[in-house]
Image (cartoon, rainbow, N blue to C red; front, side, top):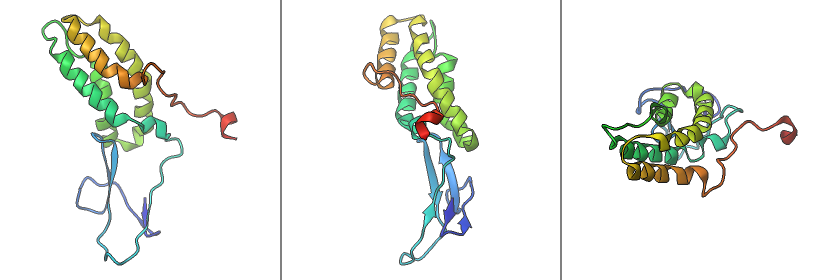
Length: 162
């Protein structure tokens, strides 16, 4: 990230210092620029790693919101059952990226690889079947895009990029 062509903005943990940080709960990069006069022209250039594909980030905020709501529903199954650890792990993807942005590509790939398996685990939960089905219905519809398969977020083949 460069500011006005020469100044490099680095990762910071502060909302007040010039720099950037990643907000894992909203899947957003937050940039704080140094103070400048409003009449001065400023330029911010943000470069993402070439391997980061927009499809990996597409919809992540909604996916995690639905996972959270599904977890709330499934936690009401207690004492018979509980939200599967694999589902909790998926929900925490944003936080892990916030702590280690350099691992974003791996985390997002894992999320998309594991999500269908986690959804397939849910019918086996013990407890109130209606509650489990409500959680499945709530979470499944946006993930399969009305019956369509999840988007392919794998890296493009060499042939398709030439």
